[in-house]
Image (cartoon, rainbow, N blue to C red; front, side, top):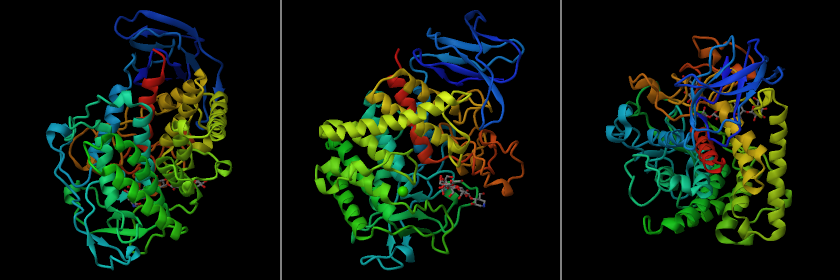
Length: 544
Ligand code: G3I
Ligand code: 9MR
Ligand code: CA
């Protein structure tokens, strides 16, 4: 078949399709309405892509820039799905990817006026939360009841985890800081719309308000999660009424919290009229969490025997120290927080490895750095992006993913790679950096060997059975829109519990559009965040 980005491409973007099978050596792009040929080209040489094991030829139609709706045709094969070329081609998916967070809000009803078909009653008030034995402190002995409402459900489950909230909120706020023009006037049709704050920030505040309640005021420590003892059944939020606990203060939770609160204090300083005192309160909370982590530098989260929900266990904490230190240094200017940049490596951001986020902040805040530091930042980011570029160039699909890059949440890995390429492009606008980022975005929207989009509600063949409890339990056929599913994962950790089998063990083909597949078809807040970031970035940066 012919695989394209099923949404389409901005006019100035690199535009590539993957062609699997067929004999013809050429392709044509036709107007989807009239059938008129608008561009002809030769297909590239056939090459095998290791993650999928099969051969592919590429059609490069970047030369076509005229806005319109098109299909790609190769003699002997079915046409590609129709796609658009348009300047605002990613505006709708960007809105929906943010609105997905609204749909995952805890502690509130989603009325029809905002949620449409996916309206639902409130669940998880979280105003009566027990302090678990693993989380007791000087002011809060076991049995203490606290309130920590709001926040987003992490994923297809109904629990709330600080570590995963860290990278998620950071990435959303970074999208705002880097591309404010995309978000300033955006209307998400959420209850806060029109209150004077951009809706992206309104949505982020829903989780930040919860995060603030996860700090123990007596010592500054931060609970790792607010959770049931075990995962809920497949029921709507209002019907999931199990006892809720805050569990385990951890160093990673304290540092991720400190990093995001320091960043948020910077962002919300500009909105003190709308939320008086919030920025200062966030910075104070960040400082206290940092101090707690200094006094408890190795409190690795260990799952208590009676708790069986996600652990987000992370044993390597040097990256969390570097990230939180960076954010506090940038927020306060105090040298005591500053990490040693010469010793700080760079890597792909993920919930367990956040040092890349420190480099993002440093790159964005270069005006605050001394010249030598600024040089280090640019070279670190560019060297990392150059590695991503070589895997893009070497790939038969011209998508910078190798077989070993497919793991749990591989789609978010793809988009975080795009996000890192975009950081380099912002420093050195070389067209191939943007082309490689575009390719990774294409991958999650259909230019892949499965020929499917991985975003609910978007593209010709989107996921329809995500591992998302509300989508499964609500009686509405279509899943909640705007969610990126985890994607191909050869670990196939859910296979034993699935009534259907994965079609293949190949890395890029290990995907099941079935509710049972929590290892390839769940949704998660940290996976949607780079979807928000990259869809905004491509819209803002691609030449018209
Ligand atoms: O770090 C190792 C790496 O060294 C090794 O090479 C690789 C080989 O498979 O595995 C890596 O560990 C993986 C780890 O994620 C880090 O990425 C594990 O195999 C993998 O099982 C683990 O998956 C995590 C999964 O929970 C199970 O713990 C996902 O990252 C994480 O996104 C997911 O998060 C869940 C929450 O617990 C609960 N809520 C839903 C959410 C999404 O599924
Ligand atoms: O539904 C759970 C999902 O949200 C988690 O990400 C996943 C991994 O921890 O676990 C899912 O719960 C499964 C559990 O781990 C094993 N038994 C089947 C559950 C899903 O139906
Ligand atoms: Ca870490």
